[in-house]
Image (cartoon, rainbow, N blue to C red):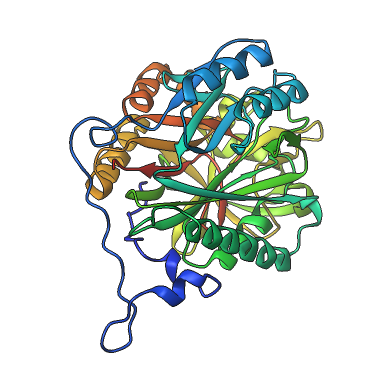
Length: 428
């Protein structure tokens, strides 16, 4: 399934908390005149200028990795750097090395369950992308102790981001004409707070499109981290507000459709995302029976190949299973509760699905200069299980995708699984 692209130009500037909203021109009947989208230019990435810098380091030593990443990304006038790193790095050393190398340039990121670099799928790597101040304004905020996050906190975060953005735009030596904004959320992937945070934040940001993902730790399920202001933080989230005059589109896709096989959650612990009963039977064995694998051990590969979906707002969203527990209960990556009707999903060709997504992106913004992508780790496991990982990696490389494999993905106000989300940024 590929979500239909939406026209988003001018939406962010109409946010009621933004001072920019007061500066928009008015039509004769008082309606706000939307800004026209910048035209995508043909030619080399960046419309004849250098493309947005991407880099990867496979060095195991964090200082060496930071040095190699800096050497590839650094240029005068960097506005911000986004990095995704393997949990195998010494986080304290890596954070300090990145801060030392990039100085006053903000560096944000998170730990992963696998990386996506200029050459496709990676493991044990540090990948990054640089955003030049010429084309971007980037402001960030961190939310700590997100296990206690309240909906009202999102108002403070949104106001902080919008005020910082408006101030930064007003202080630019050269005005950024026809700009629009999108938000990226990086959040502790084991906090079980994604639904609350992303829903509240999206509501507070109103029409600003948002995407993001949950940090990983290579399927250890022990601890995940986000990077902000020179340190890695657990039980935290970082949100970045990007403003640019380049064309962009925030997207999501999943390669599953619903089947006729239904199941009802009859026993659950919503706080821990654990389902103990399905159809009044032990959850693990009943799930295995419904997917045609009765009596077989349940593994991450099986969960990747046989997800379940829930219908919300007229659309089906994947609710992926993280693991089977000793008592035969199932732990999910997403919120779950008693009474929810789940449907066994059936896969469609993921390669065709990816090509359809890319065709839709190019139809909207032209060939992308960069796709900042968040890909569910279960999608990668499925690609590896089916022998499709090299072909998918080729497509990720061809379309300039940089990102990571995540424990969950966010799109606007939804926390989802087994999904590819991100932002595609067009050429200048």
